[in-house]
Length: 70
Image 1 (cartoon, one colour):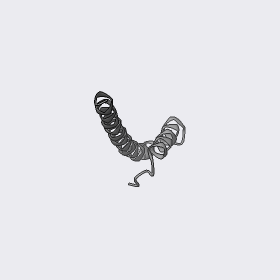
Image 2: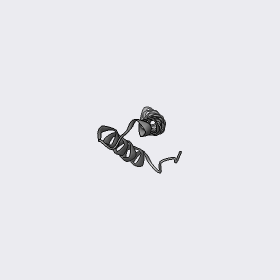
Image 3: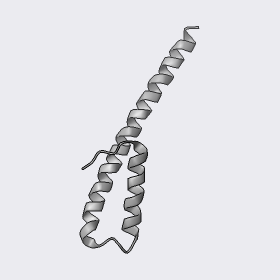
Image 4: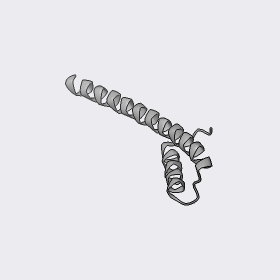
């Protein structure tokens, strides 16, 4: 299990997996491995999105505090 370098890299790999799953190249034997990898990538993306959301919320809270102090 390789950790993606970035959110974009994870999305690109997910799109690649989806193309493989939709093509004639995907046999039943590889389906399990592709599904497992897709789930790992989805978890990675979810964690990145939640982290980004918390950082944005923190910045917004700081901006609100700074504005209310004026």
